[in-house]
Length: 393
Image (cartoon, rainbow, N blue to C red; front, side, top):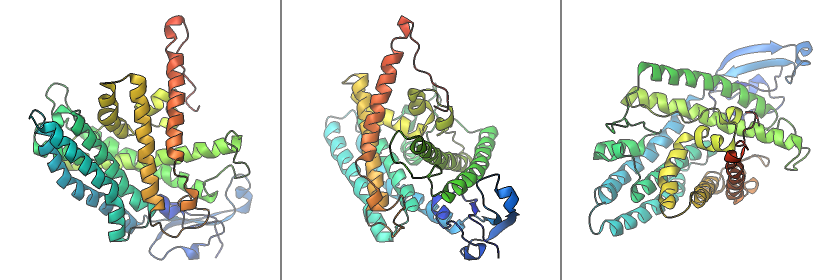
């Protein structure tokens, strides 16, 4: 059998992309992964591109992994459903009572403390060591933490607090529910919304499959590892593709969550990602409108508004970036460091390759850069336009 260099993976799940390396033959494919298509690339044609000549295959989706990933989210939802009831009666309903602040503070501190240790307890109890499965569970926990904060500070959406059932639905929902501005009722998803979400899902699967296969062929460093200098063109090129890689992960998760939510509940949700890496023309547009809109909303209600009530907009923005950095440190630790799985020495998931503190440093740097952009944009009244860059920059 002629050996191919890599297989294109249609399930768009990063861990499965690590199952192949250069010069891996089709005979080495895991028995549970069925080959959907095989095709040959001649040596002559291969000279025109990055692929070597040989036989290539497209693997069927890993349904066992998808089912396990789904179970991770459901387990997180089951835990949070119980705590959301406690939050509703101790924070939402007690807001106007004399001891409300004392009770709410005690409950908020307890619940957030539980959320910070639950992932480690759960991973040990269930022996979960796969980083991608851990990430699914931990990401859900992060959203629940910020929704607890917005309830504590009184900034949960009015429509979400109308009843226990509505609040529990909102708290557990894997997306940003859109409420009617007049009635405060959740907007209903139309057939067009459902169709668009399924189309975005189909498109994300195709794009992710091609991107993951391309990047895994080069060990996720398509420009090589000759230089690690931060401003070296090759290093910047690798960083661009890694950013695109993470964007496409969320571009895949977004329509999955939206399509399922729309079809099951009929509730309309906001689009989570809007091609931030390729289409953003400013730092403010990247963070504020295009990158992970769900997290943007919960950070705004759970961190920015409470701080802004007592401080300046600049300080509130700094605390938001600081909170985002700390929560990414939490994810790095629980997903890749705590009782980790055995991985290759050069894997991005190996604990020695995880620099705790680097996420926090990045978000502090991001705040500094966004502040400079805001300062430059503030001179528009003097004839200097706000900073606007070509989308690829």
